[in-house]
Image 1 (cartoon, rainbow, N blue to C red):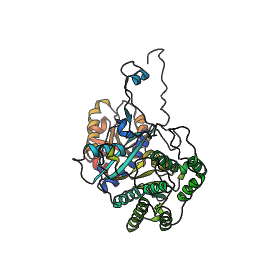
Image 2 (spheres, rainbow, N blue to C red):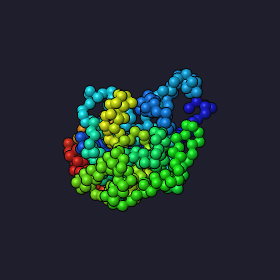
Image 3 (cartoon, rainbow, N blue to C red):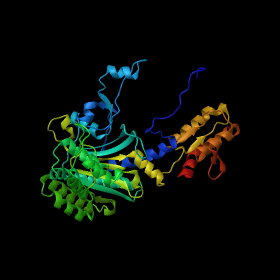
Image 4 (cartoon, one colour):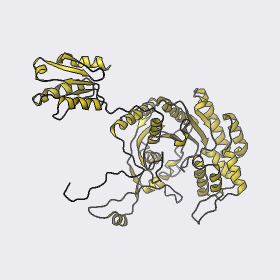
Length: 465
């Protein structure tokens, strides 16, 4: 650094996370487990840009309320504020992976199989207040089925959610299931006609676990602050009706029977209850334990594009962390690109960062500093090329192998192996090399043996198997 030049603090931005190698190794293992489940159900990989046009993300909806990260390109020494004035700022970072998926489906419908089953993992960004379990940048891992209207597709998504959670070692989790059609019927019954007020009611209910019933009811009754405020402004009687409805408890059959008694007179409400009954029957046929799923009439999902069954997964051992794996049906999301296309879709998304944090808290993560199995030391710089050849030979046998790259005493090289938890170390000095031998040191057993170079790989395989 130049003399007198001000240094910069290496601080990260609040709500954004760094993951160092030991944690990334564990995260990658988690992601590989999820990917293997998705592939076992026949899902195909997809990737999309981090940046999308603003109209793609918002659908040009005036009531869109999410805080997005907008992009500004500043040239040279131009200030960000000057660049912002010069540009339309019509680009933003994606807030989820579902909306970009709908764009892909609209753009490449002639090239994609029908139905289209895709999975995607990637970072998304939301300009929210950072707090425990909530980040501004986070990773989602989605699985979606496009082109199938049957509740069989919704059932398969729930089955995948259950399979992923059990594959990750969870037993105590609950997939809570509801249907947006039931909320549409409830809006009809209480006489809430304004589309933006309807969406706001759903957003308010979606916060129930965070704010509690008293604050939720107050929000339902709140008067608008201005002409643009979509506050539902319900009467005390109507707000109480909503509160009683979302508080319905009992067995699956009892909950659905009570829901039907309230919204069954509405065509869309009757459809919603019937779909949930079929999903419940399907899950029972698949022998998915009812300890891991239930009907819950308070589940709303805050995003406006959901149209049918919705799902949220919570950890019963760690309920305060919130939903870790959620989704639902989003028929017609492609309509913003192709008028009246009404292409059906359903899916779910793992909140990778939140679920990983939960796994850490519950002791389900094994952190290791390295994946290397063998370290080849360099005792004599003149033997560096031979050491390089040995490392390459071991690596070619499918064994992760490092060559120590700097000149250092053997003690320092062994200390490195110990710190990185590398189980085996190959040592070769001038005397060993002349005899065509190496020494293989087992760090855990604290033992060392002399071997001919010709049998080194086979011996390593025996030790690490």
